Structures are given as C-alpha cells and as structure tokens.
Length: 269
Image (tube, rainbow, N blue to C red; front, side, top):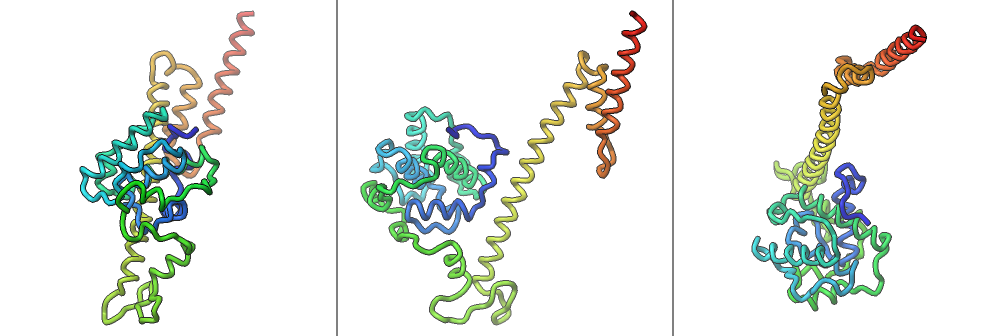
C-alpha cells in the first residue's frame, strides 16, 4: 500500500496532464488546471470512491473559495486518513495557497494510493455526480458535466474556435499586433510545465547531493578515514574531471591495499 513513498518514486514523475485526465475521467469533472483542486474537495471524493462510505460527503464543500472553507475540507480528509490509519501528513497551509507544484505532488501521491487499492480500475458502480449532489454544493457549473472528450480533443478546443471564428494560430502568429488569447494560454501552460520540470530536477539534485554528503561525512569519521575503502570513495567524490570516471583509480587503490595486506600476511607467516 502506497502511504509513504519517497520523492524519487515514479509516482512523482506523473505529469500534470495525466493527473488532470485521471481526475476528470474518474469524477466526471472538467478541470483544466491543477490549482482548481486546491480546495480539497476533489481529494475527498477520490477517497470516497476508493473507500465507499468512509467519507461523509454531506460535509464536503465543493464550492469552497476561501481558505477557511478549504481548510475544513482538508480537516475532513485528514480525519478520513486517520480512520484508515494512513500515515500521510497533509500540508494544508501550502495546499490552500493554490500553488501548482504543491498541489500536483499531493495529487500524484493520491493517484498512487488509489491505484494501489483498486489496481487503477474505477469502481463502475460509483456515480461521482450523484455523490457530489448528495454532498451538497457542486464545485461549479462544470462539475456535473461528464468528460467524454479525450485530452487531445480538449486541448485542440483550447487552441482554436469551435464555431469557426478566426483566431490567431498557436506558435507565434499575430492578430492585430498581439498574440491571440489561445496563444498566450498555450505559452503560459508551457512555462508552467517547464517550471514543474525544473522543480522536480532540483529536488532530484538535492536528494542525491544529500546522499553524497552523508557518504563524505562518513568517510571523514576517525573510524573510517584511514581505511582503503574510504580513500577509494573520496577519490570518486573529489574527482574534478566530469568527463572521465574516477572508478578505475578508486579500484586501483583497493587493489594496491589488498596486495599490501596479502604481503604483510605472508611476511608474518
């Protein structure tokens, strides 16, 4: 069961579009941005689908706009986690701010968890629209619309006009000296995706750097710093040439140390 998964787990490399497609198809919503799930209502209903009857849907506010109302949804979600004995802490103060990366990471974890429970198979007997109606306010007027178009079709609709009205073409075409609304939106989405990619790369870099730093500290400890294996590790850690691997030199140090140890044993004998 995926309750505590590391930041380098494949779950955290699932893209924004895939997460949105999963939410929209599963709950029959029409979200276009990750931030639209910041209220916590979507997460509550995902848990309701995964564990029928555990979430008191009548308490979920799908129309939550203020941070106070959003926090109430997350409190409800945390109670559900506690009831299910899930050791997952919810960063409520960060999620309600609507920042894309924070909300994406939580939804990535949620998808991994739901998939671990039902194998990624949607409960065919679950009616998301009916459950939201029983829960009270709908999130918005689009919330009850069933998503029948693929992500490709939805994206195409965003880039052009469905009624034949002429629009500026995506990719830099100009209309009256300015980018069309669809072009600006497309570029904005690209920037958001690039920012998420950079954030993930920075986290991965920091993750591995921290491991290397731990190894360095260990090698500098009095118990290990004079051992051949510590010298070999340092040879790799402090290698200045990024193009050539320091592994052969490190292995040579170990071989020399081993041969020296063998010679000493023979002499003593």
